[in-house]
Length: 547
Ligand SMILES: Cc1cc2nc3c(=O)[nH]c(=O)nc-3n(C[C@H](O)[C@H](O)[C@H](O)COP(=O)(O)OP(=O)(O)OC[C@H]3O[C@@H](n4cnc5c(N)ncnc54)[C@H](O)[C@@H]3O)c2cc1C
Image (cartoon, rainbow, N blue to C red):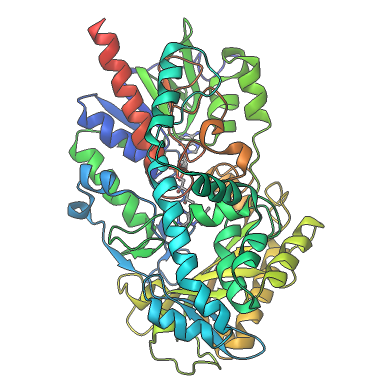
């Protein structure tokens, strides 16, 4: 039987083809088009954005729009915002309010990203000692961010390679970090190796404060707070800023995360890129050992000497490039890539704001404007993980909740609200079956947890949308349901992301570049993989033209 590829009839030539119209693919396309390359983006879904998407999930209530998967911005660097002039294309962030947790046993805590005095007041209600420690903790984190922040924009060197160019890059990195002293190296080592629970035990005593600070250590992670490496995950989520200079501050994009992707798409188009949706790539063509273009699932072939893929590594390499075109070591690395999360996103339309017993009232107050958490203590978070690890959905899940409509009036009619609950965990293999009924029961329990501290919560829900790992994998291409295209575990970071020897956004196939969240500085809506892959491709293109 003829293959779809063999039936291809139409052939079109581009300078560069970008596979995947998520935000990273769009960033790559914008830079490539800006460099003068005739660029085409191919996106399988009917719309661009990937995991940065705003959708109306309730057909009978299209006036309610939710930011269906990712929900807050922090990591997109000013370089990309400025290079692509994203503000002109609609990039507009409302900095979030404080972290807020109302406790089932009574009381609440607020933590501010940038207000030491109020933090002192809040924390001293739980522990004077912790209130004293908080400014030192903030300063410690800021010191680490000075080291780690620039690394986000560093192309990882090919450690261990003896090629002169690789050795030079490694030495350059060492030279740039020559200012580090014994203490800083020790702090970075601790951060990279400790669990968030152990790290916080060093600094704080009250379970309320530790629970509050632990959340960032387990977001999107298949690991409880007692697992080594979760301290780094906390740092990954704490070193960005939304462009206003406040470290670790997060913000809401007006119009939801889809509007971030739309702004990048507009910049790409303005630079001359063509974007096709509903165009599913089935194969990346490799001819004479080089990338040569792609084949769509309708059989159409599109040729380009330069291909950038921004898909999950399993799809990009094992499905699209094919094992036969890749070195065995690389194939083995990608086969063993860890890609679990156990995340469930619950999007809600609310008739009124949650009325917390600890901070009463349904009119908009400060505690509605930031993270509205359900992570009251370290053992609570750990229990949720252990449930899932033992093979059942968490009985009492933890949640990083936000109400973007505290600021953003574009998502729903006046007087109503959208609430987004980023929750964990369900078993890591729920990506292979829909588990529809169990997901609804899980969502019920999550809502009950909030209802214990805000008794109007359940009755205020008009519509709900529950997105589990199966839908994330099958509808959005997030294999294994991992929110970052791959876990942020230590052996998958920096020069190991996505595979040793290929962390410089190049791949074993000349002419093929890799721009997904599974490369360094991903995950998150940071655009860095897209920018770096485009830079590598543009540099190689110039070099080959000179030759
Ligand atoms: C529930 C959830 C919550 C999150 N919360 C946050 C958050 O608040 N803040 C944050 O910074 N990050 C968050 N993240 C992570 C962040 O959204 C991702 O890391 C990031 O969006 C990934 O971008 P990407 O462009 O690398 O990949 P993707 O967004 O996955 O884009 C890849 C694109 O390729 C397309 N595609 C797949 N297969 C094909 C094919 N065969 N042919 C053509 N196209 C194809 C997909 O449809 C998709 O559009 C969250 C993720 C999830 C899932």
